[in-house]
Length: 111
Length: 116
Image 1 (cartoon, one colour):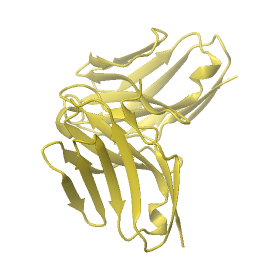
Image 2 (spheres, helix red, strand yellow):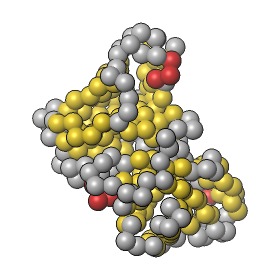
Image 3 (cartoon, rainbow over the protein chains, first blue to last red):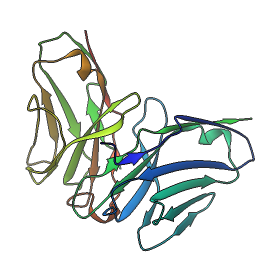
Image 4 (tube, chains in turn blue, cyan):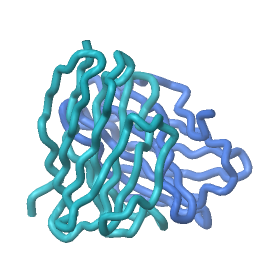
């Protein structure tokens, strides 16, 4: 049972445009959410997080939106840059339980 | 400071063999988690250790085991390897006792295991 789903395995965007990566979850007990970015041959790196008490968190070009009623979160990258091309994982957690990760979305930013 | 290191980076084994992977966390980090990454499945949590104690365990068969040493270094072992065990095994360390509260995890580059 996949509690965290990233239904788009890949996304292609033009440089300078907005990239929107989506993530859905089923467990209403999740109380924090994170996004990680992964380049080939490297481990995932933490990008941005959001607590369930918020609906938006912004860090530079990256903004995460959380819609608790829809059990949906999204990562917006504006403007997208070629260096943003990577696999993006969303993850969710609750209490002291381990993180649950989605299957990832491969973002390709075209110059 | 140095990041999370994992050894070896690449490994080829045959079915039925066993394998041990090693992870050295960031200095000062006492929590180590292990994940299996396969195409289309994302990162599947294996287990988490803090101060030599297993704190959390994922839904993997008993062939997968791990341990943590007093210096926080961790090893995971897979016995009786199966073809389906071919994956990238990632280790992550954090300051937090677990990933509670969104504590950031710092990942190593992973060990690519191929089972033939």
